[in-house]
Image 1: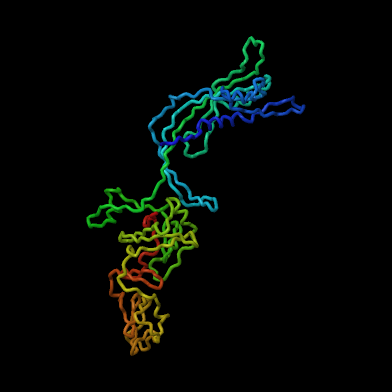
Image 2: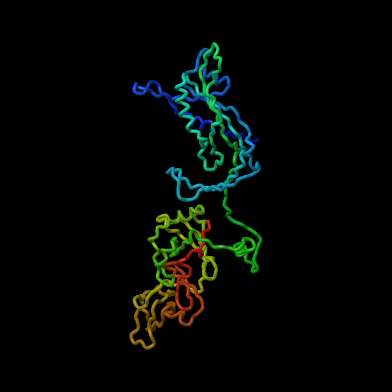
Length: 462
């Protein structure tokens, strides 16, 4: 069973009319002789027994005091000239800001989202009659001079301050003015003189709107594959289903990924971007004041561990990782990469990246078996009379390696396991000390997927 919802629409217009005719005054006494101003009360009183009893103060012998203004609804008629498409439904989407109940403030992130369907309201014309009760003609002059100047030709009112109420605005139009209620001949009675003003309000009466709370699609499962039997690419890259795809980045901003931290950068901040061809760890750009809550709040709400950042690679593949806000700094997101989307290592991991001219292991260390290093400089030579003692193996076997080679300690001596000079294939290896993966592009080692991603090369999935 449906329940009736009373919205007090007509009553709100009457309250607004009450405010219009309130706070008018009449003057008692002459100027300079302690003249006093008296506020004229306003009452709603239609032709009902209850209203008449209130006006007469529950006594048939009581006479209404003056000055006084009363008003009542004199007509409510269907306004056919303002009729529009009766079956029209207007749909509007609304997104709220997240409200913190603890601090009783609104945050910068997006909260709930709603779709509101508003039905076409019904046009009516509301007639209101205002009676001005006065004891003499001077009081009538004073009140009419104050009221009549407001309507030239009408006065705009607003029944509510609701942003979604498309019927809140209306106007009050003065249709007629009756100077007095007295007639000639006067007769034996001496009634109170009443001036009558008749007003018209073009209003709308609306039925309740339909409010729908928007949900989030967590997962779509479909039996659709591309020509290679790839379900993911079929769903994401199907131009027939989705049309020509566009990669859009918020305001064409860039992101930089260093280690496990993501930072959003404006284009002018990319002049000193961290070089991707450096195999030493690079500090993230810390002087940017662009905050992730403001960036994400434009589009939705960050769901820690569910929301993703997708980084497009040169081969059109994507490195995907879930994100959470850095609890210590809103400029950073903590990026947890999905290892299934990251490039797969083709070489066994290394323990560190070292300069063999400034660093050397202790030959007496018994835990060197299986240790692997990536060298930044060349060391050793065939005719070297005094090889570096730190890199000597059993029987004083010297290490001969070049820059970008990977060496490993096994069988009590160091030997080269990756010869960079003779290998032109793409290789991937991870530094297990820093967790950074590196890529051999045939000429140098670079970070495989860390570094700068300009606008259009990354996407945000909430």
